[in-house]
Image (cartoon, rainbow, N blue to C red; front, side, top):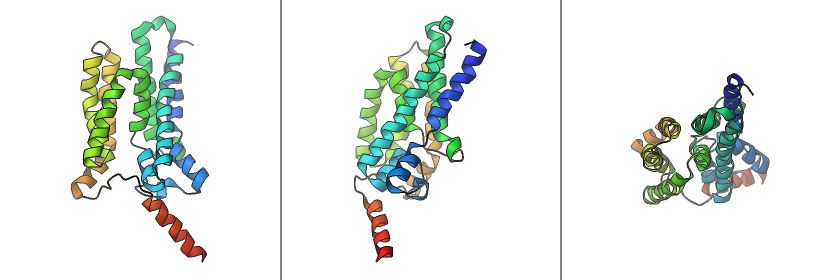
Length: 223
């Protein structure tokens, strides 16, 4: 494929892969509900976890992460061989950013979407695997202390460029990605930051309180 076509093809394919709204699909298939009308209304894994429980939330998390990995892989497959390692690294980054953008602004649900953290994590598994363990430990520690997924997400986003610089100082495409992805994730969490300041942000739990309430309402209407 000519280089002039490979770039838009990589962007489009990765964007469409990232655009698949797995949270909407999973909740609709298994519960007949629209996740956009439940909880925070967000179409990410955290809202699914809050409303429907741990297992569905983790399933959507894995699917959203897969989108990020797939976006990077698709973009790399379209990278011209003559561009060499550095050029192909830029294609990986292009695929990662396109997949994250697709998740955050999906054309299938009115250009709405999730915050992009899970999709970014999937892309990072392919892009910079040595950073994953560090970021996971930091994320879990922050969430365990503060009980806010959004705080953990913002913290690891803010630290990600520094971790990349320490582990991959010569990969300029990756360093550019780390800054862009961190900025997008933090910007997408601005409403969460506002709710935390007002004391309105729900803390993470592993109970199924909201789903139990939905079932109770349905039961009350049927008797």
